[in-house]
Length: 234
Picture (cartoon, rainbow, N blue to C red):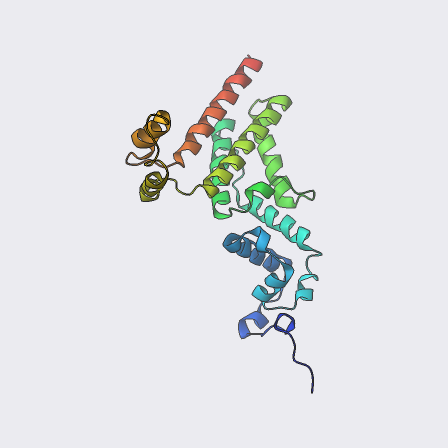
C-alpha cells in the first residue's frame, strides 16, 4: 500500500475553472499581489502561492525563477497602476496628478511603499514611469539638478506619507475619538497642554481627516519647488 502523502505535498485539486486558465507569469504576479494585499508581503511564499493558484509549486518556477523575481514583478505592476504625468498640463499640475494617483495606489497596496525603490531589477513599467516623470520635470523648465531634487523630495513625501497613513490606528471620525479617549483623556493637562490642545481643538473637530494633510504637504512642496526653479532660471 502506498504511503499517505503529507497534506503539504498532496497534488492540487484541479477544478474546471483552474483547468481552463493556463498558468502565466501575469497570473502568478496578480495572485501574489492579492496575497500581499490580504496578508502582507512577508507572508508570501511559493508554496502558498501555488496553493492559491491550484498548481504544483514547481509550476510556478516555469514562469518566475524565484521569490525575488515575483516581488520585482509585483512592484512593476504597482508602478503600472500609477498615472504618469499627463503631457497636456504644466509640470506642477501634471506632477500633482501623478502624486495623488501614487498615494491612492499605495493605499490599496499597503505593502508596496517600502519596496518601490528597492529593486535592483527594474521592470518596463517602472522604467517607463520614471522616464515620464523626469520628462515632465525637464520639459517644465527644471534643470537636471532641480529635477533630481524635485523627484527625490516628492517621492520621499509620497512613500513616507503612505507608510504613516497605513500604520495609523485612526485617521478621523469615531475611530479617532475612540483613540483620543484611550490615549489623550488620561493625560494630565498641566504636563501635555499642547498635545491636548491640538487633539481637542483640531483633531477631534467635525470633518477632520488626517488624509487631508497629504494635499497640504504636497502643495507646499510643489509651490516651493516652483519658486526655487524660478529663482534659478529668472
